Length: 215
Image (cartoon, rainbow, N blue to C red; front, side, top):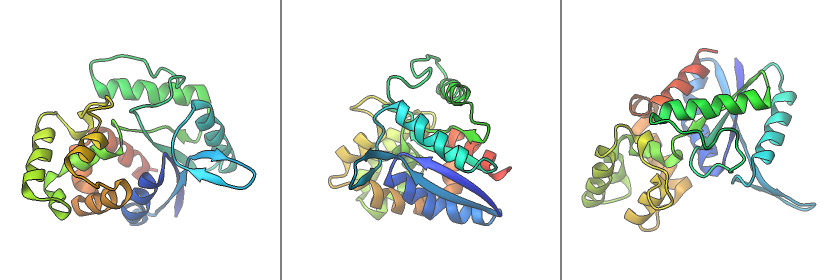
């Protein structure tokens, strides 16, 4: 068995790794372990989740990669709202996949960690939940599902659903579904649709999964 460490943004991604990615990769002879980014450290407590500075990401990724020099380290960070000092984060390209690839490669170049593959979720984790609107029948009524389907149909892929404060995928869901709970509902929905549907609908995510599977 091979080990892969997935440094991720918070408990939502951690749950996704444990509930979907772990069984998928286990069948391929790969163990995946989520490592949640720490948002704050004090002498008494360590809080998990959230990205305040790229410097924190650099420090924790460097520690993780150097602690496991012969194992693969990758990430699950939302492209939306990354810190302003992230390498090349202002790079512009009409093609969102070209733009994301460019920033990921710039980060890898700056960190210079040979066992690191930096990966973004586009534009944030909740984007992949638009891969199968029908799954929302588990937590919402048909009218709500129709609204979610209308959003999905307005974009080439779920990963194109845009990234402003008002139109980010998580914001859209919280406006449509009162009481939407990121961790609990995100896990329920993604498990219902399954990783194969998500991969079919989300090219950047699919490429990442295939890169890990090919180890």
